[in-house]
Image (tube, rainbow over all chains, first blue to last red; front, side, top):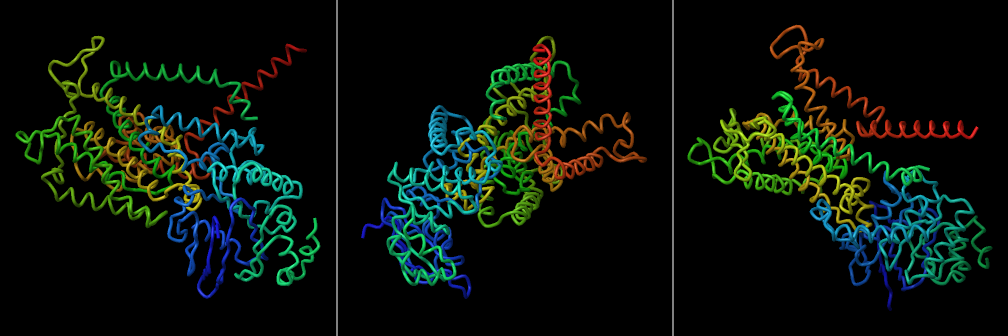
Length: 261
Length: 377
């Protein structure tokens, strides 16, 4: 199987609690793979495992021939894996600087070359800035580049996070609840933006999301988690009509209704 | 809004900055020709503190790694310089007789090596625990130096061989070089050396803070997980920050030794560590300009209070009764200033300066709008 990112029989325990129980997931290249499930299903844990942040209790995670569980996260970024966070972390920096951080692994200048501002370091910084401006243009952040990132409206901050992850030019992009906390209009904008980005490049996307409407309109493949286990895996249409999924979403009748958007 | 301001007034800002820099440059160059020894010594003390503070603000402010280790690193560099530069024939202590300039460079690298050796602490500990661990280095350093008398001179210290550059010894001499009719003695010559070092430290510090490396250090401060998942090797970023910061401390240690003319392990104590932290907090964490302002305040104030104690209320000369000593008064003032900073302006003196500047710009714009309205009407 030519999966780009693969987790096999992963179990993560926090004390007596099994956040993930024998979970396997296989992300094939070029698609948009959604991980859905009710609160506490283990979606964020799975994300943290896939991006090398959490260690696993047992099981393997492989990305581009790298053993994710044994690699330090910055190596995974170099290999082409980038992620965003559900809770935005931007710090007191301008939007431009925040996005520039994403280009860290694509630039080389170290302490000495930065301190001396050698021609090479300057050229590199200029090129990085240009690509950031280009990205900002695409994501509608061009007018905010010199504003403090944390002072932007919520939806814009989310887009800064996305821009930072895209600046790393990833092959696989992990999006942790990209539309969480947004209003309907912002959600639609973000969904459209992600679709555009996906159509432009060949970036594989993996997203964790609560919003079924968004998932069904965007995803090419769905994995459903409940109580740390995979209860369904397949196309969005298949997953949305799966009896286990309906049971997991018991009481929330929107899952079956929005099969055909 | 703010963006528009920046773009429209950028050329004028550049002109103002250029003129200001030129004026400061000229002032620094002619100052030793007019100032007396007291002011020169104050300037030298502030310069050495500022170089160290720039290093510390990169470590504590930009990278977020609390460190008390600065006196330890300064002591290491100072003793290394003295030991390497001292003439083995004339000294009662250990001396290798290297050219002083080479000894100074090696001393700075020695401080960097000490920083490298201390850096694993930061990958194990953080916050106040890291601070306490680095604090222990100050005591260990003092203990070693007080006992290794061959190198450090022990409790009484040892004299510092003068710096010598391009055949010019930076010391008092019967036939000093003369500039515009003013003989350049030890203090004057050291003034120019300090000015050169501080310019290099300032530029290097600013360049690092505003570079790819500076961004990665700030990311480590904001969240190590965030930094790592953005491709930053957290461990090596911290290590780099330690080495760089320690080399600044090393340069500060050598300047300090040259300025005071003798090194004694006793000087590099806990008090100095706290003074350095006070400098970077009062100046504004993470800001190179702030570090220099903080250094001027914390290192310069006790000397000024001491000198003008007869004209100031409450301050008395050392040993006199009926008031407080200059150093005590500085402690009170610095303490009060730190509390005020925390309460009202966490960005310190630099924050105050920025506020003042934006107030001035706003006032200027308002008058401009008013005048234009008046002319239209």
